[in-house]
Each structure stands twice: as C-alpha cells, then as structure tokens.
Length: 234
Image (cartoon, rainbow, N blue to C red; front, side):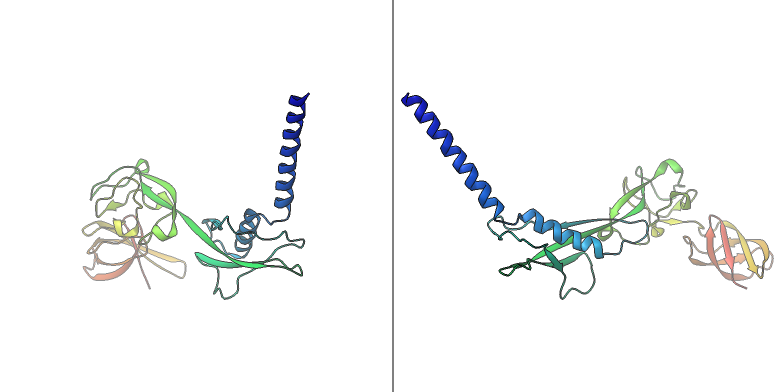
C-alpha cells in the first residue's frame, strides 16, 4: 500500500511540474516568434532583383531573455534604417498596456546565377558547353562582370587560366581576340552593311576595340556584339 502511495505521489509531482512549465511557457512570447516576425517584415519590404534569389534570417536571440506573452499582434518597424540592405535592425514591439520592445538584427543574403567553369581551364582554351554550368553565388563574393547565360560564352577564348568552380567573368574571356578575322557590321535606318576586318585589340561582349577594315585598311573603333563580330556606329 505504501509503495502505491509513493508512486502516486511521484506521478502527482510530475504532473504539477509539467503543468507549471506549460503555464510559465504560456506567459512568455517565444523568441522564435519574435525572430520570425522580424524576418517576415524584412522579407515583405525588400526588392529582389530579376533573376536573383534571397534568404532572410534574423540573428539568434539571447535565450536568457524573457518577454511576457503579448495579447496583441506584434508590431515591426525599421526606424533609422536607410533602405533594406544586407543588414537591417528591426524593432519588434508588443502594443499591450504593459508592452515591451527590442531590436532584432536581420541579415539578408542575395544570390545571383553565374556561369562557372566545370573544370580547370588554361589560357587560350576555347569554351565549349561542357566547360560551363550555372550556379547561384552570394553577391558579396562576386568580382568583375559575371555572366548568367552560358550560351553567351560558348566559342569564346580564355585570356587567363581559371579553376574548377570559378566564375567566368568578362575579364576572363575575349569574344574577339587581337589578330582575329572579324565581320564588321554597320547598321542605320534598317540598312545593314557588312564587311571584314582584323581585330587590333581584344574584348568581351559590349567592349569597344580597334579594328582594321580589310578593304580600306582604315582602323576604326567598333563594339563587340558576338564571337568574331563587331559593330560600328553610323
């Protein structure tokens, strides 16, 4: 009988502890709720550039901090922030009569699709489809003018060695390289004139290089518009 009584007492004690824990939890606002409110606020106000993807995460909060349960919806604002950049401090407030507030740092990470090398490639290599793949990379790790469409690079020549997984930027390649024979286009008012020439400089898409016209032997400035192709203004 005494054994049963002791066991019954232990069960009652356990129930009491669990009950008190639940009551204590119910009187506090979970820190994860606060973090989620801050992150959702930033997510709703940032502008995501075309083609990019973004991740938003609020910093961890000190688990020793305790905030009373808020009976009203939490409020979020970003006072003093000039825009929504990589780091934003969000003010979370409980509008109850005996409310509270705190500031939550939120980090935003932008990633962009970029073409990277699938293997180590040496200078003068001609890029082929199997040499290229697209990966998303953190904007803060990107250097130079990157490319997101592999088709823009197929047939281009590397001007320097790049490693496996390294982004292929415009600084790494030339669509027209010095000494290449090129097609020169002159377009105006719906009329197109085409002739040939020799590149006297190297450039990527959109770069202006010097080109010698094969017929007139004149050296002109022309804009690179494709592999082996340049365009002059008229």
